[in-house]
Every structure is written in structure tokens, then in C-alpha cells.
Amino acid sequence: DAIKDYYRTYFATDRSAIIVSGGVEHDKVLKLINKFFNNWNIKSKTTQNIEFPAIKNGLFFRKAPIKQTFISFSFVNHKTTLKESLVLDVIATYLAYGTSSFLYQILRHEKGLVYGVHASNNDYGDANLFYIRTATTHPKEVIDLVSGKIQKLEDYFAESIFEELKEQQINTLLMGINDIRGDLNFMGQCWKIYNKLIKPVELIEEIKGLKYVDFIEVKNKYLNRNNLCIS
Image 1 (tube, rainbow, N blue to C red):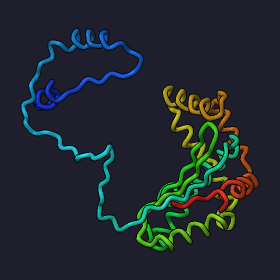
Image 2 (image 1 turned 135 degrees about the horizontal axis):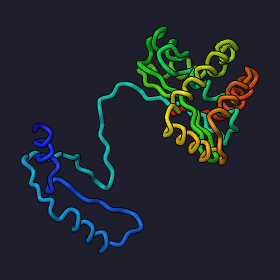
Image 3 (image 1 turned 90 degrees about the vertical axis):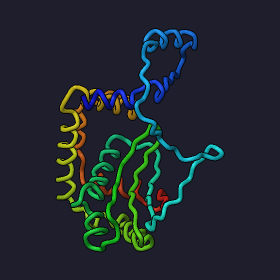
Image 4 (image 1 turned 180 degrees about the vertical axis):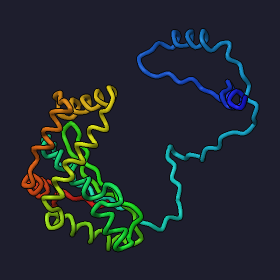
């Protein structure tokens, strides 16, 4: 009864709109709407309306009393190879994936400068974006600290850690493709980015084949000051 009452209260004709887009003909769409929704005539039981902020000139900005500074370290690069992208995935995991990650331990646990930090490697058709994002009330200290750690990353990222994170990447991949939908989504993403079909078992072999020297080369090639934009 509670579900039915909620439905009659909010899923009503006077609180609804039908929106159609794409290559369709208006008259045909109108006939279909009348056919399937003509008998739908439920008037809302509530007079409570959703309030939206007034928008002027097509834009809306809301100033909030935020004391923290949001910081993004963005490394913008040309399209990477599959091996290079996999190495960058491992680096992102090491830097800021979970509370035990390298930057999280330093920035939050040791220094108390941030609440959270996130790193991500993103591949596109013709470009790559690797970013680290956080928020703090001490922006200069965080910027100097993160920039310095990235430039000397090989001093902290030992070969043994690299091998452990390779296994973690494989386990994460296997968890993401544990059903047919995940498997198809994975192959579709690979096709879109690399323009070829890559099976999960093939990608696992690629990850296993990564060497520590690959990390050094990729880090120096992509995560350098020439490619860095801090905003």
C-alpha cells in the first residue's frame, strides 16, 4: 500500500513530462503517446513542488563557503600503447587507490593535509589523461609534496611493489568480468580505445609481461613536468 500511495502521489500526469529526441517524426510520436498514455490521468495528491534555482543568462553559479582548495595534477599526453597504459594503471593504483596507497598514507596519515586523494589513468581515441586530485587548506604544501614525490617516484616504488600491484590489477580485471555483461563491456572498451578486439586472457598475459624497466620508461615519458598542468 505504501508503494502504491507513493506512486499515485508522485508518478502523476501533472508532475510528468514526455521527452523524445532523435530522428523521429513529431506526428508519429504524438500518435504513439496518445495510444499508450491517453488513459493515464492520475492527478498528484501533493501540492509540494520541486524548487529549482533561478538561472540567469543560461548559467548558474552558486557560491559556497568552502575553505578548501581543489587541486588537480593533470598529465596530458598523446595516445599511449597498450603496454604503456597498463603501466600507468599500476602507477595510479600505487599512488592513490585506497587508504593504504602511497599518497594517501603521506598526505593524510603522516601530514594531515587532505581528507582523500584519487588518481586515475584515462585512455581516449587519440590522447591520454593521467590525473591526481585532492582538496586541502594547504595547497602550496600539497602541490610541492605531490610534485616532488612524482618526480622521484622510483625511489619509493620498488620492484617488489610493482609485482604485487600487477597481481592486484589482474584480480581487479577478473572481478570486473565475472559475468557476460562485464566481459562484453570490457571487450567493447578495448575496441573503442585500441581499435582491436582484446580478450581478457590476452590482457592478463600483457599485465604479467610488464617489467619494472617499463615502469621507469613510462614514468619518465609521461609523468614529467613538461606534461603537467596543475589547476
